[in-house]
Length: 225
Image (cartoon, rainbow, N blue to C red; front, side):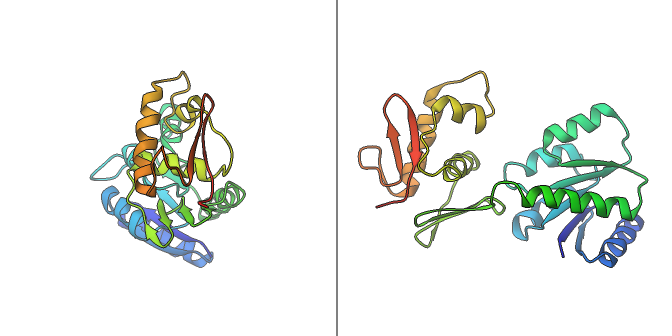
């Protein structure tokens, strides 16, 4: 059984889809607005979001852009907008699939199962490096029982390194993959975020415990001794 969050402002569609998905074995919660949905994803993370683009408070594509820095939950866009430009924009903003209304409950259920299968075979959502646990789904990090207060980019950086424990990652790679800057950028950006991250991990560049710089190469995350 998957926990589905349905984001749909039309009460008739919301009721019909909730009933249909419940009959197919899913647990369904629903929200009529984008901001209430964003709050629920953060506070009660679902397994998947079904998102209408035409919401009363914020456009669905804008909501996707707000959602992605705080959650990696799979999202299926279910909308009446049958336009290639909108489809591309939604996928670029972080949607995992795009479904045009009208559609059958069977088709939506099949898309949900396909997206969840892909998510299950993707990188693990909980990463452990020694006493550090990083939960990608809830965007939380705990070190030796203490929850870390991380900014979005600090979390992205830590999660990226935690997925590659012991691997030396270059600053250019970090800029490309974490900052989405494939053509390079300022190494100083990485250095500053690494400095902030070290402080929150309770270490310094002079006395590293987990974040170790390899001169002239990059940085690696290893279990604390």
